[in-house]
Image (cartoon, rainbow, N blue to C red; front, side, top):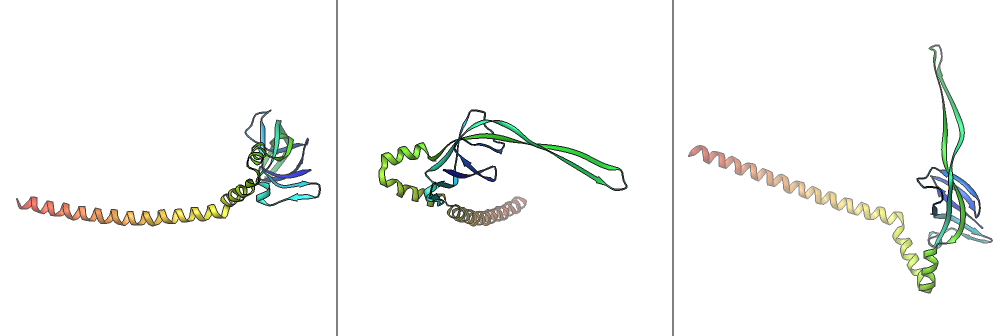
Length: 176
């Protein structure tokens, strides 16, 4: 059984008991992490759909932090004696994969809820789709822009009315 996870913008193929170096994470050694898989393969069964993966998770324990290989760079400009020599070592977090499968909360909920769980998973997957969130955000921003435009127009009209009233007051004061 193996899974493909997304960690640090890169996809990694992981198995239980494997040590994996991922981009540096802000976690302490010994902490437990749960990662969402992009793909789970269990023998002949391949799970790819978002609905089926909603209940899946990959658990890992943070082993420590390591440095990658040294990268040496050298730049120069010819005929001007400009030279620059530099090096870099990327830092990585080492994870030990401890389990692939259903999350603990999902397993407990499936025992309690029974078959109604599949309907809930479908609803949550539909709610989590990025297209729906973007559409809702676009509608909200368009509504706020329209409301902002009407507020601005109303504010300009009120300011113009105040200025005309102030001008009339100044004229009446001069006449007294």
